[in-house]
Length: 175
Image 1 (cartoon, one colour):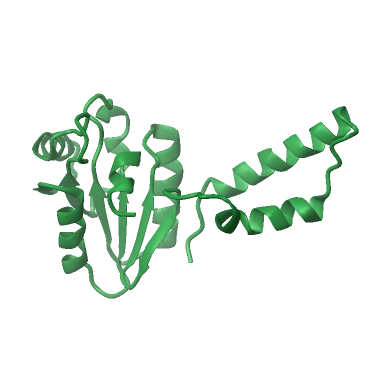
Image 2 (image 1 turned 180 degrees about the vertical axis):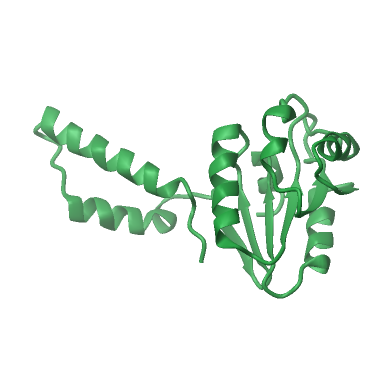
């Protein structure tokens, strides 16, 4: 099972912060075991969605709301290391996103399904397709995120991975 590539960094930062708080303010006592227990129950105790969320196991569908260069670099590195036979990307972005800074991060050998998130700021799927094609990312444009995801599911073979992302709004439509 894949784990969110940013989780370890976030946990280290949180634990360091708790440790510093307990040193600075004596009324905040840091307990490593209670902190670890809290992290293991995070998804149950907090309405934490859209961050490396598994939507389906057969086929494996993951959505993540990473939308900038730093976040997408971590996500795409993790997907590459996972070494799935084929990865299908259902992507949608907002229309003011500087795509030149992120499209080059995506693998050229994947399958792409471009969609417009159902919000006024959603980038037109055909415009996204044109910009992605210029970066060597080939695929089809779809009228909606759900239709794009349906097409990806039909194309995916056993053992493939479908990733839905590019925007919080794109992820929200499939959750």
